[in-house]
Length: 412
Image 1 (cartoon, helix red, strand yellow):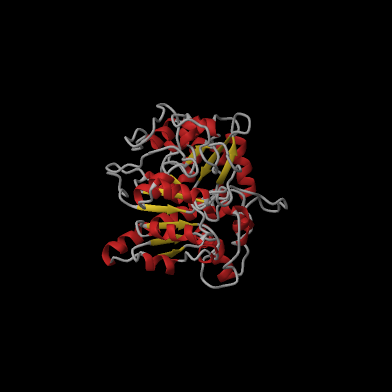
Image 2 (image 1 turned 90 degrees about the vertical axis):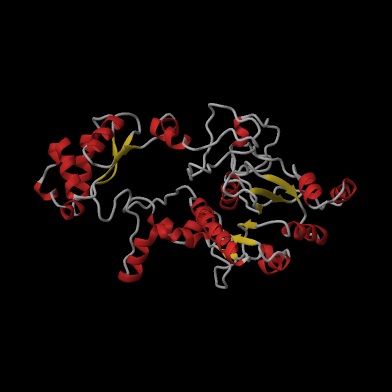
């Protein structure tokens, strides 16, 4: 049995952080119900309305349920309902669903759910066991940033992470993937598990206020502390480390081909010099000397690596005890044997509850590999409102006439 079987989750997530948290819970067995408005897709949807199923947002549309693309999205494995929460009848219907649910997740700004009359204080009176997790940009605690509305790139800038991207003395601003979203989703997942454990002991749920920006600050702990304690602005460092050298990505044979190499100790440096004797210079024998001369050091390493195949050289370096691995484009990554072994381990692609999942196709897996209770891809992306009859009929007991009346009124 999946580890989270028996839990019911109401998922208000939009864009990335919220939907990804819902997908984690669904892959591990929870019944996740995507909550959307009947007249439009809720929130921002990357790719727009009726987005292709390969994108983050949108519903399944006309894609067949046995098409692998129908499983590539953050709402796979979820049910979907439509409900107009701005109408009192929709709100009352929602509160009845809260009575039968365990978790509510959302990544709106802190003012959205209270403005609908659906704050945690309200929900917990209806169901004291409910766990609510909110993933806003800066948290719901009162303060000057409380109601800021951000998107991935602007959130990273708000918390200073953009100042660390790029190369020294390069005036061009650099972008990266808006990975604050998945980082926050991972933190929120662990917090939800802790809240479930707390509920087992106390019988009561709780409100999890998780600021996406604060969850990601641990990635910048060293430059943050350096600024607080030493008044030093780290600035962009390219690929270099502050306590390891060489530490970078070096050119190899091929078009735009690169090899990552990290030397963490003088012992690893000696091993590297065993493969590249010309690097064995007295001024570089100690780490401090290498850190103080990184421009010349990187140039010397690059002159050696550019004449080698990335994978062959990485194997030699690893055998000598030096961390190294090629930079892979998506195609190379997908055909790599080590990566395939990792991603296929303990992933159930043929769960009984799933619509047909095509064998041999590649699917985005779960980050957790558990031997006894593996994650499972259980169903394709739903269409908006696809499970209205099940939720409002089977769970809440509304007959067909009542459901039809609600549809005509635009409530569901």
